[in-house]
Amino acid sequence: MPDSLPPDSVGLVQPQTLHFPEPLTLACGQALPNYDLVVETYGELNADASNAVLICHALSGHHHAAGFHSMDERKPGWWDSCIGPGKPIDTNHFFVVSLNNLGGCHGSTGPASINPDSGRAYGPDFPVVTVKDWVESQARLADRLGIQQWAAVVGGSLGGMQALQWSLSFPERIRHAVVIASTPRLTAQNIAFNEVARKAITSDPDFHDGRYCEHDAVPRRGLMLARMVGHITYLSDASMGEKFGRELREEAYKFGYDAEFQVESYLRYQGERFSETFDANTYLLMTRALDYFDPAFEYGNDLAKALTQARCEFLVLSFSTDWRFTPARSEELVKAMIAARRKVSYAEIDAPWGHDAFLIPTPRYMDTFTAYMSRVAREVNA
Image (tube, rainbow, N blue to C red):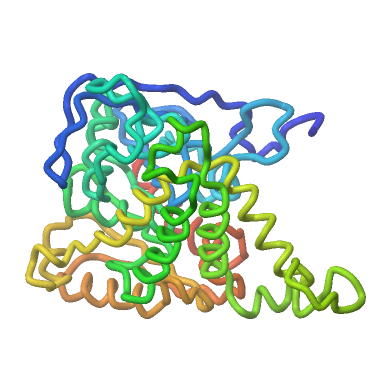
């Protein structure tokens, strides 16, 4: 437990739950009669509400992006390296909003919430949500906060998809979109990984067709396997080799099937920890939202045509060893932006950590990110 908080921390923060009583019609055709969003904010909103930045989270993310909930908290929010005084998203200049998306399991309305029609948890009855649905709910959040236009919408991975969708769904309400370690749509391989993860969950005997809460059960084994598969795709071969190699937990082979290699032990630990904190139905929802994201689909699979809707400027960042969302996918996006005559800055960051590199504050990444956001801040203060 730290005796004091770091000087570049946003400090102690308190999440808040905002209730939205009006129905939200979703892309699947169903509607949520009302819903809650859990939000954290950092920094101060200026007089004309022009300095607001929205943080969109990735698959297993949530609203706690920066700072600490208490002095007893060992780790800060999941993107604390990028949010705070003097950091790329500098809270001396920006009012930062981070939320847990609809369908999440950290307080926002999701499968574990009570369905007002039945009086029991939604479970598998919670409707499938899309990136476009999330952006619609985020626009209503902006209305609630008195923000007519975001200075920037920022996200990595699935969060980057949301930033991109903002530029298309509400082109007049966003000045900059920062799309990090993301893609304009999943490849067949990525969809396949997601299906393996979902199958691991739904095949768990404790899944009970998604009604495990009613059986006082948790499909821990399925969640553990899903996370293990996902975690492998987030790391590069080089980073796994450097961290674990073929190191054994003990000095000799046991000639059995327990975890003998350090990498096996690590994956099991990650999977077990995840299974204790994440909801299985939420995992199914989030991966399906990833699968469905394809803004070019409505424009005859012409991504450049889709991007002609955008009015904002873009920063696109990729990482050299990211084989989940490769630099080639970011380059595809950038080429379409150029063809659509959009203003875009692009950098491929040389980093050995695979897809997870967007969470690691390497110098060139931080320098590039900071330089762009400093320009956004100068525009706000102009």
